Length: 197
Image (cartoon, rainbow, N blue to C red; front, side, top):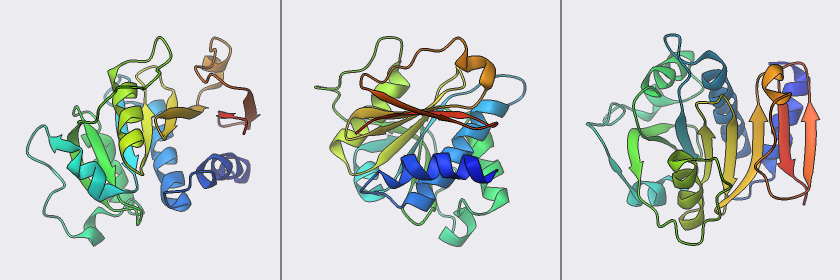
């Protein structure tokens, strides 16, 4: 990752109050890799929740037997290249990942069960985005949603706060879903759109 890409991500990750910014940045990078690479020749979508993991676990349930359950936290740190590749494989499963502030992947393939009342979702964004927004409204986490259209979106306090467009060719055809004045920053790797505060 180039220094300019790191600067782009650092800015949107440090604005989040309730999560560890370095962990969030690592998850955004992983999400961008998933958006770019897909799996086995197809684009995939997934959700990562970062921070307030106990509350997220209370507002979610496993959809299948949890593939991360029972592993030592040292074996599920997102700092490990092996864990990052494992998470990319597990992203093909339906459901969300729960990541704590230390960067430990606690759970995978979770159904996020948070009330969506009061969530104002832009048209064109689906149930994955709604679930990502809702969980952030009811907990202190930030969600990072990878869309099958290869866009990565960050939700905080029930609102869409940033979009990361990893492919330059997408930018030419894209109009932002963020309903606020935008701050746009780009480098040779990606473009980041975020709300101007």
